[in-house]
Amino acid sequence: MTGALKLRFNRKQLCIPYVAFLVLFVICPLLVVVYYAFTSGTGSITIENFVNFFTNTNTLGTLLYSIAISVVTTAVCLVIAYPVAYVLARSRLKKKYVLLMLFVLPMWINFTLRITALKEILSSIEGNLSAYPFLNTVTGMTYDFLPFMILPLYTSLSKLDKSLTEAAEDLGANGFTVFMRVILPLSVPGIISGVTMVLLPSMTNYVVLDMLYNSTYIMGSLIGSYFAAYDWHGGSMISLILLIIIFVITLATNRFSDDETSGRAML
Image 1 (cartoon, rainbow, N blue to C red):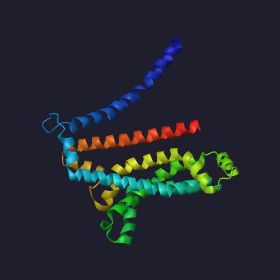
Image 2: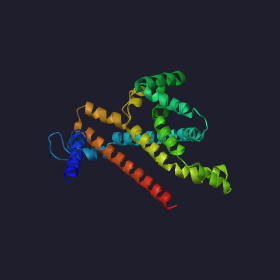
Image 3: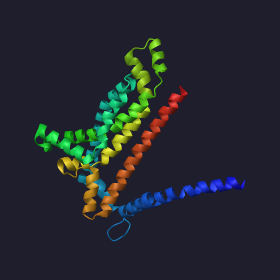
Image 4: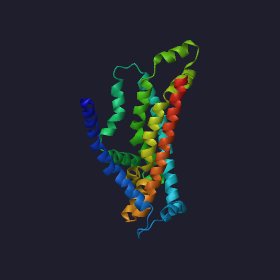
């Protein structure tokens, strides 16, 4: 009995470093952001920062532009990544892992070098990058986040039970029907995981836009410009609003994933 209590006590002690890390580096910084978001320069509590965000056309335009960038980037990554992951997962090649590694390999190279190389390529093709800002930003984001879409899709598709597709074919289903009724629904967890890994970071990633255009017309850069101007209150409010948006999106995707899982379990 004493040994069991001692073991339980030791396990609780092991949690102390993790709890201390969360308090110091997650909870405390978040409380600081909340404090500055709802206070003014004099330290008084106010919602003026919140009102200014939704009444300022610049901040609203930046938010909508960031959402558009992230949605289009996610859609493009999904359209490109799904066929690639499907072919790799269904392929009988012995060295298909080498092909998968070719898509992951750019992640091992410094991000700045990759974007600089992409900038040179786009400059040689277009000449003036500012002529197509939205298209070039999506291109840079897609180049950056494509592996994050391929990997979860490949993992989900490679774990599919081949007997399910064989049973569907034996029942007379053609290739298109098998894909739409069997493969695609079973790969939804991989799609949700890939969408989450691309949608949320691309909404706040400002390095691509900064390196291509030296612009602040995206949420991450806008927040940085507020703090650079020592407007901690406005920057904190924008950070808090963006955090709420990301939390809602994550909660929605997780609930959708749980619904899909429970639906398949009922079947």
